[in-house]
Amino acid sequence: MKKLNIALVGLGFGGSFLPIYLDHPQVDFVGIYDPNKALCRQAAEKYPSVRIYETFEDVLTDDTLDAVHLVSPIPAHADQTVAVLESGKHCACTVPMATSLEDIARITNAVRTSGKKYMMMETTLYTYQFFYVKQMQKEGRLGKIQFLRGSHYQDMVNWPDYWLGLPPMWYGTHAIAPMTVLSGSRIQSVHCFGSGTMDESLHKQYNNPYPVECAIFSFENGLKAEATRSLFETARVYQEGLFVYGSNACFEWGFADNDKPYVTTSSPAKPGERGSISHVEQIELPNYHQTLPESIQKYTINPQHFDPLNPQDSLKKGSGGGHHGSHPHLVHEFVMSILEDRKPAIDEVLAANITAAGICAHESAMRNGEAVTIPVF
Ligand SMILES: NC(=O)c1ccc[n+]([C@@H]2O[C@H](COP(=O)([O-])OP(=O)(O)OC[C@H]3O[C@@H](n4cnc5c(N)ncnc54)[C@H](O)[C@@H]3O)[C@@H](O)[C@H]2O)c1
Image 1 (cartoon, rainbow, N blue to C red):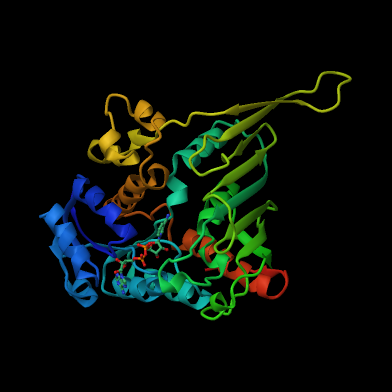
Image 2: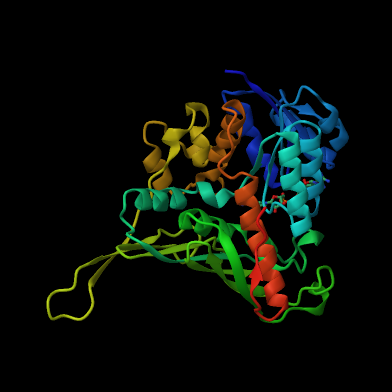
């Protein structure tokens, strides 16, 4: 099988993907670009085989590159994605895909006219927790899904400038994505309310008055789902939570992000007794490393703690790899979608629905909860 040449753009959070690409058996060459030259030098010292690009333009004009993975600041995503696709390269981009419906349309058009792959690198779709829920769904253990909830609580004080005052639902993808995939449907419309107040200085950049937004999404198949997102002045422990309510079983995220989740099952009511009987269990999650090439399985866990003979035990030590083990799965899916010439699992259509649902949710919040229809991309 051919091996790929890939460039990684943006080495903040993006830096955690560098060793994974370098260790992927189907990747030959890895290049890096970040306007912060010190970060590039540090990376090249640690991984001497990488090549540093001096400018983003140099990445675009290098015809030996097959693909580019963007992990740049949010305001750069749309223009850089379109530029990468138009330069004839496959493009992976971190979340969110974009922050306007117009930019989502520009990206979906560029995917279609270029014929190249686009993948939104949504970490929540490759976590141990999400793998477990998908397994419950596949095995029929959930029964009918009756309702879904997602949460993402995070405090962005002292983060880079572009974060300050960001409408919470513009970065709603971690709360919205898992619900969308589990629904087996497409988000059609949203009602959303903004809540709370925050310092006036945070209103300026995006004309957003809300530190918290709470949305109800309607899916084409009739399901409903709720997502809550907080970004500022809200003293809640970090959580990227998923809550699934099925007719036979429910899955609920632990209180804090790394707590063990709860699974509730029910047995039929006894004759004459009111209500069925519930059983609740806090579960130890398995690792889902087996689907990955051996050389990158260690990144599902903090690599220093990975015991290849016993990956489950490594996970129990609480040393989960980046974003609940998701990073190597994202890399592998992007690489294999190119080599197998198929759509990546989070293609432009799914990414557009998830991202646009958040953009429309904020629009609804600004119109005091009015229904907003999510365009089809
Ligand atoms: N779970 C997740 O999926 C997850 C987690 C964290 C961050 N993110 C996303 O990753 C991105 C980066 O996050 P971060 O915390 O590293 O952000 P950051 O702003 O701290 O750092 C981004 C990096 O990109 C570099 N950069 C700045 N301008 C650039 C440009 N025009 N082109 C290329 N690189 C540029 C900066 O020098 C910096 O090293 C954001 O878009 C964020 O939304 C996703």
